[in-house]
Image 1 (cartoon, protein in one colour):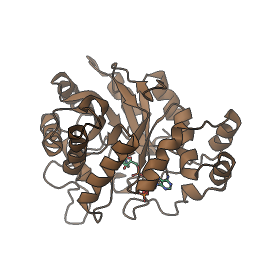
Image 2 (cartoon, protein in one colour):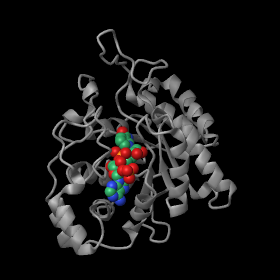
Image 3 (tube, rainbow, N blue to C red):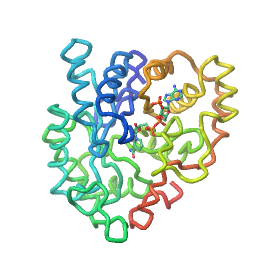
Length: 323
Ligand code: NAP
């Protein structure tokens, strides 16, 4: 890790800032808020910004980034921007047009990282979640290795500096890694990761292949009804996290973020609140002892807040395997 830039080297030579700003917000949040908070995040020091085609906010995130470039706060090369290939675009011929759509929305020439959002192909078309007359998702059958080859072409074309995946399990990562004629390895696997699902096995596997694990839901997710697993505990109310927060005179959120950073995980933190956006930057100001890290390891209970239950019948549903 580079202590000056708080960056980690990716396997293709590029660098990723270890703390990223999550931009996803529920539909009812006005889009103008996304512009405001993304600008606040850049002002607070965030240089890594995570969004996706499916968040329906790339216009606003792009606007915020461009305005912070225009006012001289940052240069384009200071920002690490991640977008994601949505599931209705996994057919190889749809990959580049999907990225180009994101770039048009963003009004940027390239993204720093483009990742396959889930290994689950859905029927191509305008709908993000195509459904049949019974309200069931309509799946598609796509060879993920062919999708990956199309991702490689996006990197060669300069539209994405780095390419990676999200929500892939070990088998699916190996499928890409073992693909005959592989040109580029995925640089990252972005997955749900926090003290209740610490992903120790997947993390070890990723490290062994020089793939960075990027954590989402690090603060226990936004607990949106549509996606939250039933009977999900509230992570930031955990007694051990709260006790460590007291000990370090920080907040449970900061302890949760710091725990991941010290395990070599790149961590995303979403906040649409100015005070909490600034607070999350304090993750670089303290260090947990190895004893406290062990205590936090002990919180793991393999609890997935976002199991994507609606896709459980898809042949590539990633969360049925142990990891
Ligand atoms: P998260 O980072 O786990 O945050 C959850 C909640 O914590 C936020 O709603 C936020 O509320 C609150 N929070 C933030 N800072 C806090 C602090 N210092 N103290 C107390 N509460 C705090 O949320 P997430 O959106 O699930 O995940 C983060 C990002 O990961 C997303 O925005 C998205 O970019 C990405 N993501 C990717 C995937 C994928 O499939 N690849 C899936 C989910 C998410 P306030 O806004 O009110 O502060």
